[in-house]
Image (cartoon, rainbow, N blue to C red; front, side, top):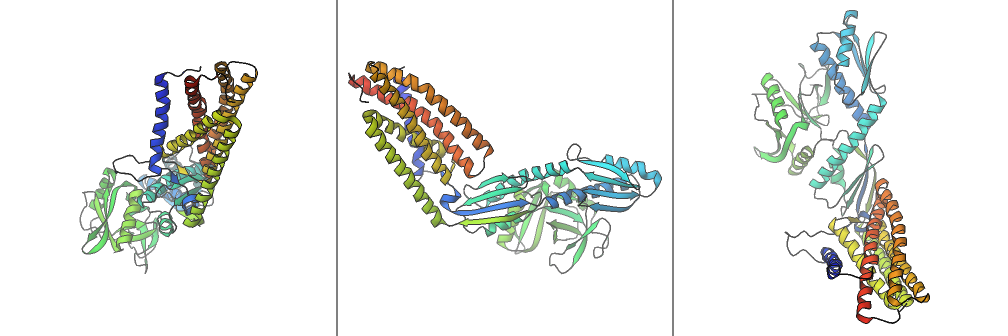
Length: 512
C-alpha cells in the first residue's frame, strides 16, 4: 500500500535515529561511566591476542571416580563389619574389586556394593567372578561424565579468565573433551596457562597413624618443601567445593590465604577438628600437601587460613583459583597460537578497505542504472549498515574477519532486493501503467519474492549459527542480523523515501 501515516513515518525515522545513536559508542569515548556505552568488540584475528586449545584429562577424571568408589567400598564394608582381602582398583578395566573374607559374608558384601549411591542411572554394575566381587563403571557413564566435566570446566575457565580482567574472551567447546579459548589483546598468555593448568582442587585429610610409612587406604604425598612424603588418608574429611570465599591477606608479616566455608563445609570442619584435637591435618591442593598443621583446638567458626612460602602474586592467584572453583580434571594446552597486534591492524585495514570499496562500487552502480531510485536504494543501504552496527553494538558482539565478510555479503543481498523492486517498477512502466500504479504493483510483486528468498537464507544461516563454531558462527550471526535489517530498509525505509518523493513531486513519468 503506497501510503504512510504520520505515526508510521515517525516510527521508521525513529528506528533509524536510534540505530545511529547506538553506533556512536564505537566512534567516541563515553562522556560518563553511568551511561550504557556498548561497543562492538574486535575478535582475535582483528585485535591480535592468543589462541589456546585445551584438552580435559579424562583419564584423571575416571581415576578420581574409581578412587572415590574404592573409598566408599572400604567405608561401607567396615561400617557393616565385613572383612575384605586384596581390594584392587583397575583403571584400565574401569573397575574396583575385592575378595570377601568369608563365604558367609559374600552376599552382605554384594549388598554393600549395590547400596553405593550412583552419580547417574546405571553408572556401574556389580558382578562376581572367581569369588571376587567387582564394581565396574559403564563406558556410557564414563563418556557422559566426561561431557559434563567439560561443561563445568567451561564455566570455571570463564570465571578464572574474567577474574584476570581479560576483555571479551571467547570460550567454546570443541568435540567431547576440548575447549577453545581466544583471548583478544593478550599477547603473553603464560599467566593464563598457569591459571588454567592448575586444577585447584583442595581437600582436607587426616594423616595416617604413622605418616612416614605407607598405610592401607592412604597415599604418599610430597611435603610442602618436597624433601619427603607423608601418608595422607584417602578419605576426604572436608571438600574445597564447600568454600564460600578465599582471599589473600597478611598474617604475622607473611602472605597467607584466608578461607571461609559454607554451612556444610563449616559443619564438616567443626566435626573433624573437634574429634581430632592434637592430630596432624593435611591440606592438599592438586595432589600436593600445602601445609600439615596440628589441630590445637576445635574450629567451629567455618574459617581457616593457609600459610606457606607465598608471595603477593601466588597468594592472590591461589585465592582466585579457589574462588572460581576446582576443575573436575586437569586441562592441558595442546595447541597455542599468538597473533600480534600489527597483524590484527593489517586485517582491520584490509577488511575496512574491502568493505568501503564494495560499498562505493554498489552506490555507483545503483546511481548509474536507476538514477533517483538508485539514490534512494543507496540511502537504504547506508541505513542498513547503521542498523547492523547498532544491533551488534547493543549485544556487544565480537566482530571477526568472517563477520566483516558477512557484512559485505549482506550489502550484496540488500542490493539484489532493491534491484528486484526497481526492475519490477520498470516493467510496469513499460506496460503503460500510471506512475502511482507502477509503484504500487512493482512493490507488491517484488515483496513476496524478496521475503521468500530472505526467509530461506535466514533459516539456513540460523542453522549455520546453531551447529557452527568459531569463525563460522560469527559469519552466520552477521548475515542473520543483515537479513533482518535488509528487509526493514528495503521494504519499509526505501519505500518511505519513494512515497515522500512522489507525494511532493507528483511526476507524470517515473525516472527508471
